[in-house]
Length: 310
Ligand SMILES: [Zn+2]
Image (cartoon, rainbow, N blue to C red; front, side, top):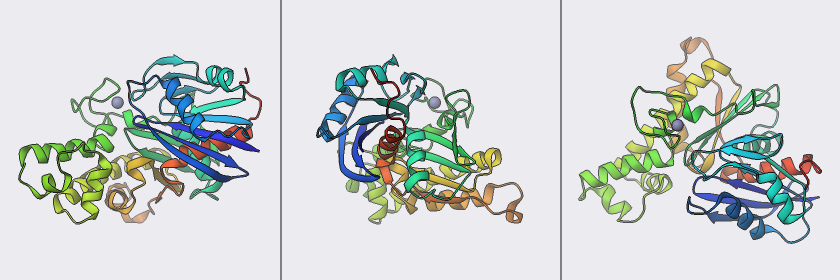
């Protein structure tokens, strides 16, 4: 069967068309908060639809009530109590399944990515914020519905204002915008610095800072390392709670690889209680990259063909 998978994050939507586990088409669509959430999802679906699809899966960065496919709320996407499943099903006349984007991405990594064969896995997505998903004994763990929202664990008193409205959340220190903000501070304070020359006057993103680091800019490398260390500290805290076999790091910023993951691994190993007497969990970059959430949503749609129809 052919299914469509959508992953709606804070700045872009990924759309894939999947048949028999093979990704046949991928599209990336810019998204910002001036667009309605449903309109962005419709546009993403239409970008990959060819009439052969028999179900649609949608992953959204936010609190998703999976029983009826409602986006209750998300800090990086507009709207609340958005009836995603009902609206998409009515518009495209297809069965629709809706889930949190990180849950969808972890589903994909367990089925066909880096987490094949692992039972106890955490997925940490670094993008506009930090998303999370948990697999225990091979099954996605949701708690009462919204487990894994550790981007909003408070890591410092006071602290920076988060998109969720509170202060000091982990994602204010380890995310694309966190890295971009660090770089902007440097460029503003030192307009003649090499980083200012490398980054230019354009719109700064976490990925552009990583690109500057990877091309050899020492300041950019220090900033990327700082974010990687913040990531690693959080991973150590999560390991104290879950002691996973594997931590998969994904999302737009997480998928850049070793420049972020390397420092995170070192801090994780140094921060675990028990020190060298225990083995830290394996930390791997998501194999399916930034499209993991969309692929996972398509795979979820394969698995639940008639739920939420109409
Ligand atoms: Zn927050």
